[in-house]
Image (cartoon, rainbow, N blue to C red; front, side, top):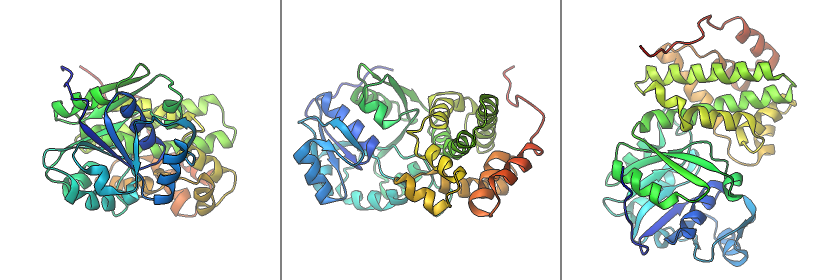
Length: 343
């Protein structure tokens, strides 16, 4: 795929002043493009303009002087050819709805959120299609811990869309010496994998807090991957997508890093916190809680075997202890190691 050339004057908008939205907006500004970062809170936006730092999410990350920071949604979107939606799933539909009147037909609309809408099994690309039907849609996913991106650690991500021109344009916007962008036409599979891995990151945090060994973590990672693949394939996604950065790459980083919000949530739960206390302790949205609820319901509806997701659901929503859930899971697993084979 050839790289799409983009004029330096092309306007870009990033909606959402969290850690990842801030990181990608700053990268785009550093690449010489006119980019606006929209924050909901006027006071926080003003503070970021004054200090050139997002003190709440990335306090050590100096923001490019060319980055425009605003709480005016219409101003952020004015003339934007590419819009990144980098807000939690709970606020995603509202922001998309509010953005609608300001977004031009043919604009590239890119979701960076990993999860499902609170009301049910609805992906963020579907939310964009509902509220912004005049746009061309893609999703970004992958092993992208924002603090590491901000520190310029070597990182790779996936831009997923059947729209090849959209993929090429996002690659051109985001690529740097430390940030690599790969393309994948299977937007459905990438989006599913990005949501599902949050379930297993919570369980990995629990396992770490309980002091379980590396053998246990290896089992958790490989069987999580099997569940993700089984679920995605049942829904019609390409099971090979789960083997890419948006699947196994993202699964690995969120299941091993304390920078992962879902991992930290699992640690807090295993330390004896209630779900409400654990969420408050993490202090940011952990998408895995809502994802577990929604995926368990969908898996039961489709008859997809997902013992790990079912075990976490039992802990979060059915009053079962972690020890009880682990014991039940240990005796319910299938015996086949590999379900998908080539040839």
